[in-house]
Length: 348
Image (tube, rainbow, N blue to C red; front, side, top):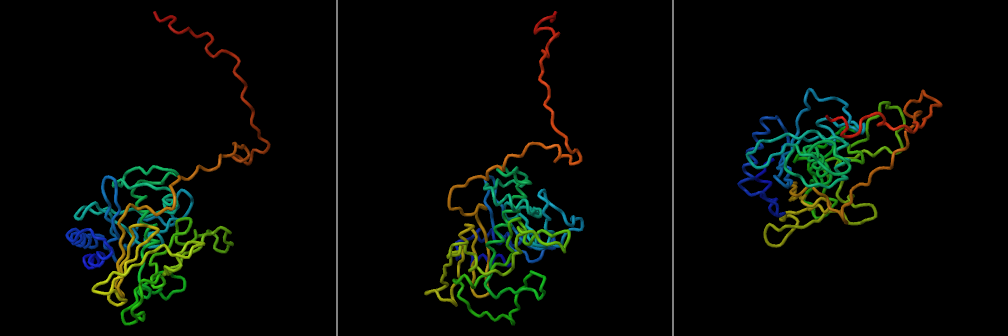
């Protein structure tokens, strides 16, 4: 990504890290890309912390050779490997332009599910403990990665017609439409139907598709989550029972009277305050700057504890012990201190 060029029209949305810092970040990302072999690298955004902020870069890398295949989290859900699903992109963070980049770990479905249920400010320390209920499985590095996954799945967008699906019925990957094959023309980018999501959404278990079954021929369970589809239009983002989409559109005139051909269109997410996109024709840029918190209509209430566990059952613990019962321990009827010297007696 040409960070300096993208920053010039992100300023129309009121978003800027400063031209000097942006230029330094551009050079720093070039060094990072050369050192890691990352592709399609772009400046994702900035998340504020209590002690320090996180500047975030996004890119694609090949999976490491020692990555465990079919790894599962504490809930038994399969973790999507590097380069697939929720881990299609890899993220690096630093505190300021010129600081050392730190690679974030891959995200697990368990982390995404818990991150949806808690609200917590970042501290700026990747090794910090994440408090709250339910308990988060990991440190702030994992929590930051889960928040990035949630924000990206809902707010990274592009003008309709810029991407197309790969010609493979089973694949959900997308590719850029070549300039000579682009037939979109100039579109009214203040229309939600002319924008699409470029990253796959996350289902209720924190994955982009249902958990793979060991027996592929077995019938799927009734509560199996749906598979999310790419290039979903923004016009379909309205919540159930509502007509308005959670987006705000505003033309920003380049000169004089705003027109469809001569003005940038600023798109802001109402569900994730701080997520913005700017588009003009086929040129567009996405950026996030905020606290990593979604908008709520009421005060935050932690998730209530689960139901009280049933009494211990010998049969449940050991099905082979049929007919086994508990016997109450006999009451202690004798003084346990009988025969012991009284306090202070025999000290001499």
